[in-house]
Length: 390
Image (tube, rainbow, N blue to C red; front, side):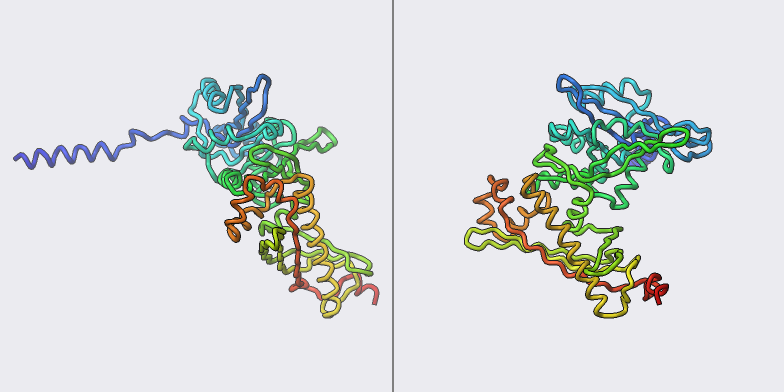
């Protein structure tokens, strides 16, 4: 009899466990799609959240930044505080739903905040259980909030536009997790995509759009400068992260240009220390596919191919060397992980200089070696120009 009672009690407890007593309905959440952090007066910060409006999408879907009826699918709510935790706490009192970070794919630091230091803000974002470590992080040219308020044409809201730009590989792709790893590395340096809000003149009204214009460079947790988009390409090469990209080159003594898409790339960094002289060999092997040929060169001819390959190699070498020069001599910031490479190969030497790496890094001699081959000429062998001149 006692066994039957215990079995009944156990069965009853299972019924309680199978319920949805702790479920949170979507309608009870304020779903965040982007967050912007700006500096305010008196050492305060402003947290701006782009909040999704479910009813705008359910009314028929949205195109060009709005719902079926043309209304926006997001709104922006902002609040100031001494830090992010306080600003979020105050902001939550203004929202009828609980803030949910699980769909926040974009975090944007305003330039002033970035230059002052982002360590305290990262502490909150990494400590809080909801913000995604795979979310992309950016620095804005000026204030960050306007990027969250923007209504875009192709996507329903600006956060999705910015996220897609990051995924296309226009600039660096830096996630929250990757940012934390970079700042915790031997060099304690980081690189974030630098994004700008630009205005296009229209016949009826002006149109604003976000686009990546380069890289924000950090020494420890403070932004120290920027790299242009051209120099950013050099960083992407060195980090072996080249994706969709076109290199346009001009072969020596040839009229016209040839454009190539790198289809495979391998980068190897090999550190050396000779008599206290620190050197880094950067060896790059890449293959390119021709996407346009405005010369009269016949790229089925081995000598013509070789001429184009030499120009290809020189172009890449110049990009890499100019990027390294700016990082060493102007920004004095090692975002290329030279410190990590030396640490792995020469741990004893590294321990003796790790506290003064800022002095060593600009003096490292860098030898860039590029081997570039052209493997594909596309669907036609001769250029259209050479056909017309026959």
